[in-house]
Length: 151
Image (cartoon, rainbow, N blue to C red; front, side, top):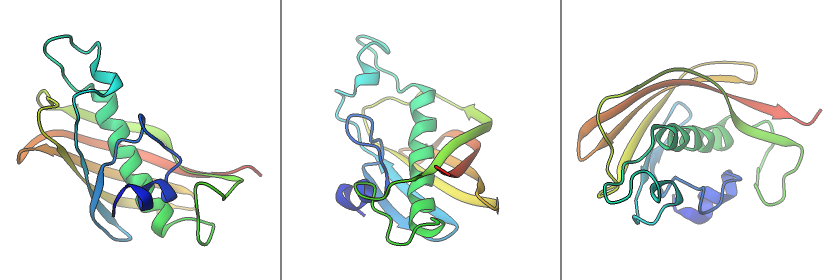
């Protein structure tokens, strides 16, 4: 899945769109990639001369990835299109239960997220995520997303 389909499923747009590509997806899991250009806004002051990807942006990458899965498979609206569908917010971060950052993530090469839906009840969805860079586990996360209607 490339950017055009990703932006149909997510409201995020550059420079805040963090999912570069979706490798595979199903009703219960998704695997995505974030490729870095080195010019990302969050790297400009974090840290000059020695850029490091902030943990908050790693969480956001995972949140957006899980949001794609929710919109694709668990959306209350048929044929959802972020440009035209109004009245619903899909995949809103509700809670970060656990976030463990195991080592620094440098923007010198892409990162890969493997996300699994652990449980769902009504419009609440619980996920676990692992983030890798060059095959090395960099972060483990546990978080909740919700689908919210304007009603």
